[in-house]
Length: 221
Length: 362
Image 1 (tube, one colour):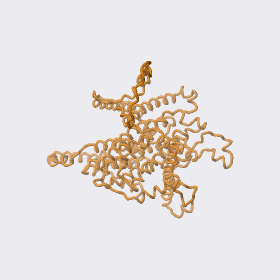
Image 2 (cartoon, rainbow over the protein chains, first blue to last red; image 1 turned 90 degrees about the horizontal axis):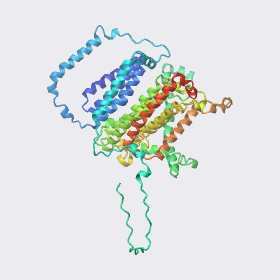
Image 3 (tube, rainbow over the protein chains, first blue to last red; image 1 turned 135 degrees about the horizontal axis):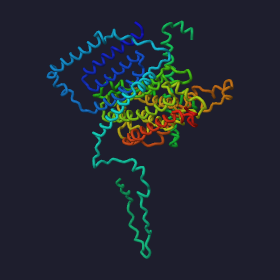
Image 4 (tube, chains in turn orange, red; image 1 turned 90 degrees about the vertical axis):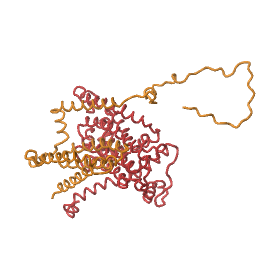
């Protein structure tokens, strides 16, 4: 067994086991962390196929950003695991056939005569200096330019829609507008009033009796 | 070298790689130790104090203060590690490892000189970006597994902050790779060769450099972006429940990340191992000339300067308020980087490209 095969089987075992634990773990946070582990193992498998750009992007996007937000939400939620598991036996009669059907489809795809592993030749040996990243970039920005840009615009619309649906300004919010703060000038805040320090002809009030000095009251902000 | 190669046979490449890894990791660890001392000294002098000046090595008076990091390390090693009740033991103990692993693994692709790199891979910039984005897991897992409200709040703050600033950081790197035309860090440095200081990426990409560095400060949770720790608000943030070695590893990870961000800034914007002024007659002097030519020492000087800026920022600025951090990241940095990427795109197109000053850079 070559070194690459050992790495493949180790990564494959980690991937399968962690994927199983994603659906069997009792704690949702553990399940999300196992999903992260399976992403990392999948990225390792892609690296073995010389697909380094895809592998690193998988880590960067899914592990580095998407799963962090997932964990963020799951950790904040107050999940009662017992209540989540209540309806298990009621759903099982419907869920089991669906799961079996899905497994059958996947099996047929992988083992079948048209899409089976035997139909897939191993990736060709690449020449020295061949850059996977450059090749993907060339294809993405020439042949698939329009689908790529369309996908980008659809994502942008989704972002705008998500923000527009959730953004609402309450009347009593104490939100601070930074540009107003920065644009504040001395003239707008301070008014200098000319006050004569003493009036002519009025004698000074008698000195007050000595009292222990009280600290001045704090100005409320 | 050949003697060892014959002695070990097929195991030789593995052993040789391990030796190279050790040659990178051990100096980083020692640098981290002395960086903590440098931080206390620099901040001390900025605040008109002296800083640590007591602990000396082997009773030698001139080392007074220099042995402070080792005293700190021994103190932390001999402290008890307390695992809080109701915490998740496994995740609690693995979190410091999750936080130090990416900080050290990213060094595999960083070139120290023209040929001095452990793994010269094609997409090394993406690799570094992917690994630094994994560093947040240590913080989140630590905050959640501690079963403490303060730690959890710190973890949530840190997660939101790191994810926000990663976008600006990624855009800043897009500008770098547009100018260099490569994702390989060695190639990025080589693209800055030429007229010394003037041909570095610093001048044409100055706004991106600022964004990258400030986003780097935010990514490492350093002051003034240290709301994840925020002593005055949430005690010590995500590592409030950690003690002893586990805390020391978090500490190590933070400083290793600082060195990593500084090294990346030096490689991408400050010309890496290239000297600031290229004088051929000086470089031709037999032994001393090596100091004036390109070499790893220039990289180390630049890293040291960037690290000093980290300490300088910490001593100078008060902590950001949380909504201001988010505003800076989303409303200032991301538009700024987008605009500058467009400027770089225009400057790279043909008629503009051959006009000075663009013809000096691109």
